[in-house]
Length: 159
Picture 1 (cartoon, rainbow, N blue to C red):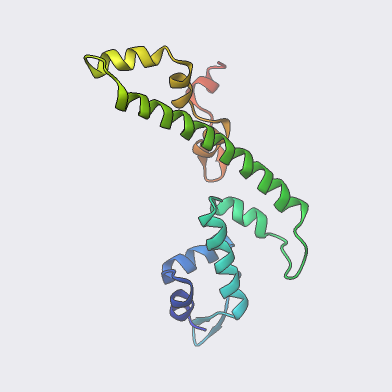
Picture 2: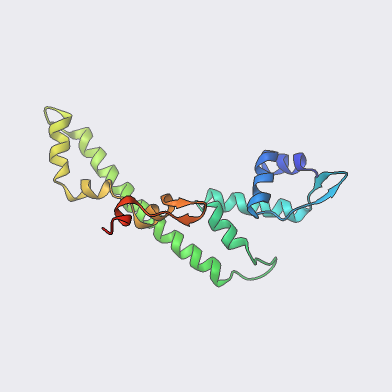
């Protein structure tokens, strides 16, 4: 099938399909008269990538998972390790969201004379301090440059 047809079936723009190819998420298709011709396997691969992306996996994580994946093979150790890591990340996000929800509910019920006073009072709360903190996995994900870790200024100073 042509790239436009694959795009219609999967809900992706042709540019996104070409991007997946460049990242190595999709194998390079055969070409006929210079046009990409995708197999049915490409369709299923795109659906898998979209599913994993919708579940919160980054394209880098998806690529790691897909490398060496064989059709009809049982789920391997690499995928299980990736899934366990993602579960921990999701649990941390849930904890943070619950703390944030609690604080927002408090703000709705607040009888302070000003937002400034309310925020000062809340800043003494352990929950408030935790809401603004990033989780270690989030820090690692934000500090990347072309897939390589980037040191923050405090790390460069040795703090």
